[in-house]
Length: 375
Image (cartoon, rainbow, N blue to C red; front, top):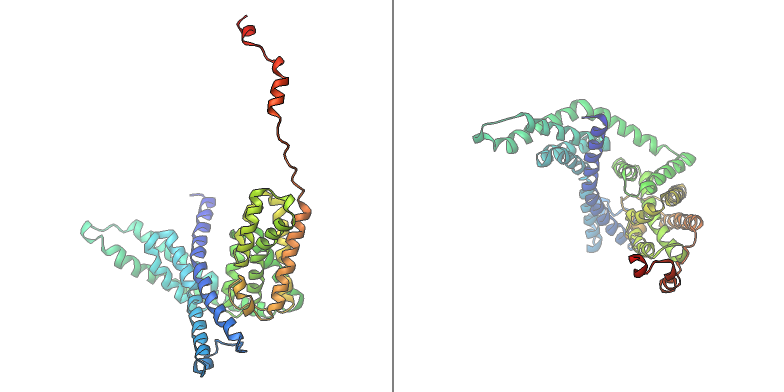
């Protein structure tokens, strides 16, 4: 196997883990958003605080519980990504060692990189066991239910605990401290970089790398990258959808329909709504998306908006600290994408109908008759 092929397989395994993780994270984020938006009506900004579990108000108690449910779901981030990276490598046999290793990563605070390493170790360990252990027919059932999960989990846990866990935990702690210590221009620059990455390939590897890393940093109390990423997710689909509304003559009917869908997908936090436009005119659309996303993210972080949940849809906007700044940043980024898109594109010329009948009558003399062909 060539290094190029191995790298491609590695990317596939990691993207599989991320794809399975995202629905779990979104579920937790929406639960948290419901509780925090609900709590804001009671003037409560820290509904997660245990003191609200003893409130005399039954609704407030429930909102505190609901926020806890969201926290439980978000706590599955590292075990899920580890389990499904292992699953991508070794099929079902990798899930148990992967999820157990992911739990250890979470407990050691080894971060996103630790979760990736856990999944890869578990997956390749299980694959090695399955490929190299050959038991008699009567004992084959022991392999998937005993040997593979036990040995796979032991090897994964041992390597995380004594080899990679502590260095990754130190790296994660140091990175979190460095990011928390950023001020002024550095914070804004970081936000712009994250936003530009998110807007670049709309759910592709660069986008997912930025978004997933930003989500993972939430567990360390670092919120700026997440704020930047969640703003940037929705700017391209909103901007391109708005462009089809304001500049109808610049888009064909297919893209106009895609624009309507893009607006809806943007509002619920799905950046893939902008993909049809990027496929149709990548050199025009991608720069506009990157610039709009970077500027919007920089404004949100620079003016003090803080999104503590990995959620970008409109249902989470009012749970953001300084939500008016957050929405203003989205609006500015959206208008930049819309403006640049309309500037780069030209009006589509209407096709003139072909006068087929008249043309054929006028040109009959240019063709041989049947009698002439026979002669």
